[in-house]
View 1 (cartoon, rainbow, N blue to C red):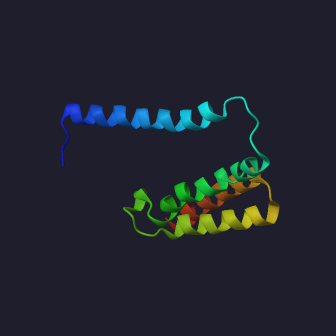
View 2 (view 1 turned 120 degrees about the horizontal axis):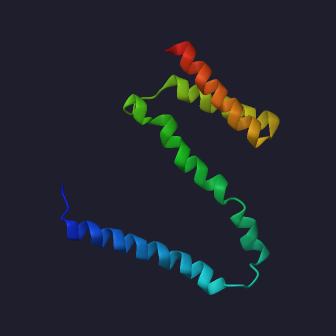
Length: 109
């Protein structure tokens, strides 16, 4: 399916306008007012909710293996979760997960 130049620019402008209006609706309506405590409590979990949605496809359907399950990435993901639960330290989790990924890649390939 191919799009014309006009259709592509219409899509780009539409997505940009939609993104701007979504941000404006939140920032423009609330402005300089303090947020209620219950909203702040829910906003703390935004990263926790977004990150798995971004990372899970990279683990289960990696583009590097053309969408087939890769034991190296799956093992690194399991190790990263384990490191996170054991240490409760984001820096150690990131570097530990990366180290396991590289070690498994080196050992299995």
